[in-house]
Image 1 (cartoon, rainbow, N blue to C red):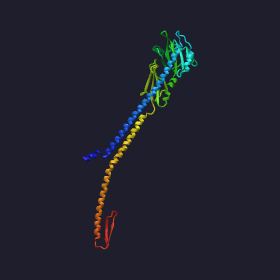
Image 2: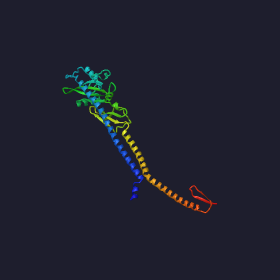
Image 3: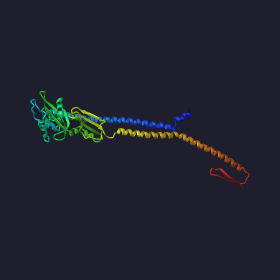
Length: 333
């Protein structure tokens, strides 16, 4: 029974079990830390996405208020009153409005500021197949809808929020708010997070081609196979977000797991050495005891031999010893 017990709990097995235990504890710690970091990253990503969403929604609401106010310059007879004055006030008091327009019967006739936008005066948006689909959708919804981002005749890209103006239940035309794409991105706050930590992409399905188009710089190294996204029905936009900085959760897990493995090996080695020590001491004691007994026996024999020599009747006895104090030869005189 004792023999079996010693075999089961041998130093090697004990060291192995201790090493496994330490490694498992380390893995548990690594796993818990990984989960905590993942939850922290997910919470942080969600907060960033919510902040960007709030900023874009605020831009949409501000544009809607401007379009609604601009629509009030059209009276019940369909006459435009004080367009420039009201448009100037809206323009100066807004951080998001870049251009304001009134579009009676689908033809752009009123623009503020006019400078730099002269080329769009007289532009019939209903007859342009590139943009009329979204104009008709605005009329169908009966509420503000943002077209684009589209390329402008005067250059650049912008989203255009159009609000139908109705008189006697008939569409008189539209009040339109243009927001340059760079203004939309600036106001969204994307630039604060997109340098090294997050990748953002704004997309929309082209109503004419049915294909999804992307409007922000494309990073070919980033795949949108794992991402968070927000939809904005006011413009049928989709904003993708993906974290691209170093995955500290995975790095932390690997570091702790590797440290646990090394710690387990070290603890197992120390345990094995510690448990082997008593047996090694026991064997050393046994060897020393055997040597001592052997020395005592040699001493006894040498003593007997010496005693017999000393008791000899010879007058003088000369003897020599080897390095182990054994008698090699005797002479007498």
